[in-house]
Length: 129
Image (cartoon, rainbow, N blue to C red; front, side, top):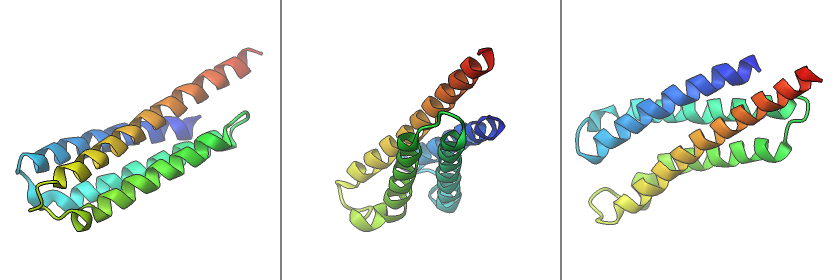
């Protein structure tokens, strides 16, 4: 459980900072901080994967949730890395890719929080028995 606790804290912080930077990009500020945003994105993906693996290896863990963390993390990384190639910035529809990337990032934090809470509850029930 300690692994999940540390990973969820890292995930929360990385998502928060990446979200703040993403908003600054959207309003046209801080364009030179893209690499920091990408690093935070990789931290989000890695911490989500650690949460998925850790819950998968605990007693009563779910393979489906572990698989979901890997799929969501992979989608976040792929969309983040290739969004400027799919619809380059001058394109008026670039915001569509940005919204998809934002929703995937929010899905990552939601999935991580759900798994952490579910694992915490399951371990508390197991300790009471």
